[in-house]
Image 1 (cartoon, rainbow, N blue to C red):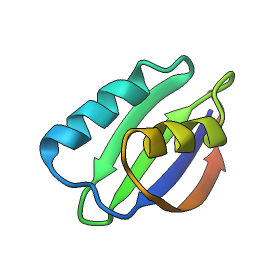
Image 2: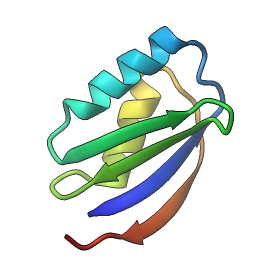
Image 3: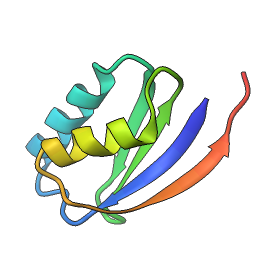
Image 4: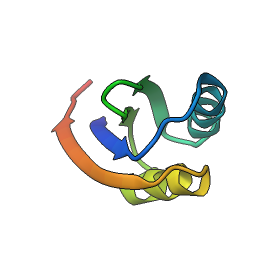
Length: 77
């Protein structure tokens, strides 16, 4: 399992955050999504078949400008 953090320009309000979390959680392979609005960071826990590029595109398509990504460590188990 992979854990990465995607930093975005603006997390707007709670309604947008809720919509984004629901949209990402519907994707096959996504196990957990958490948002830190203070850090403007979306933490993603996922496994194949999904990949980080696809997740970034989904975040972008949801109206969020992706600033950078911090790749985390691969989790086992």
